[in-house]
Figure 1 (cartoon, helix red, strand yellow):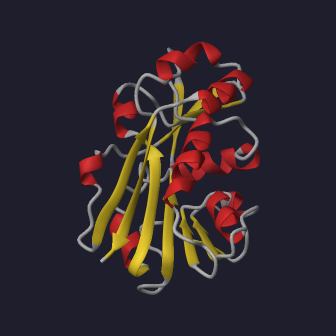
Figure 2: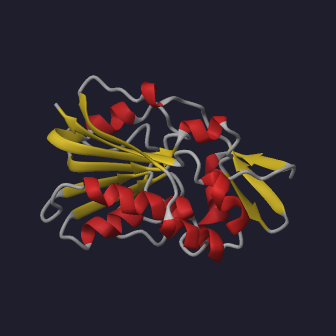
Amino acid sequence: MYERVGDDVMTTLAPIDAYRLLAQNYDTNPNPLLTLEHRTMTLLFPPMRGARVVDAAAGTGRWASFCRARGARTVAVDFCQEMLASAPRPVVLADANRLPLPDGFADVTICAFALGYAPSCLSELARVTRKGGAVLVSDVHPAAIRRGWTRSFRYGSEVIEVAHHSYALSDLVAASLKLDFLMERRFGRPEHEVFASAGKLASFEEAARHPAIFVARWTKA
């Protein structure tokens, strides 16, 4: 996903329609951004055993599965039923901007690669997190989008762009959240292997020159 697509003509779809197409192969297609995010975000998790975790915009529930394997109780929330089909239960079909969960519900709230579709959801993530709890967020780096990367993927002979909103890292503020860490990460050796397996090794050097993603952690005050 998130790549330069040259001069190809793109069809733009709303996120819900695009992710319905992506759902079947989302976890099997090589994706260096997910590799980079995983090895970055895992450094920021608090202890998981016994914690209540909300995986907002969970998709197939990658992070819900990760946390559950470490002893957490999880709820995976996403607006796409097809993506949630393989997520660990319980799941909730809902938008990240309007989480149907009570205030202070979670010890840890996660939102991975979704701010481009819901850039104002940070306050909602904070609302469902208890005082002293953690909010973890990742996304493609806004500067990468400004350099020409697209939120896109190939579907058969088509290139599908997912409709999204532009934002800056400075926009990521919520009154009740104190920023602990902001990590802006470039591709490295593990992602080099993913580029190679996807047949895109020729584009690795350029892609690795600048941060590809960011990962942030806040504490709820």
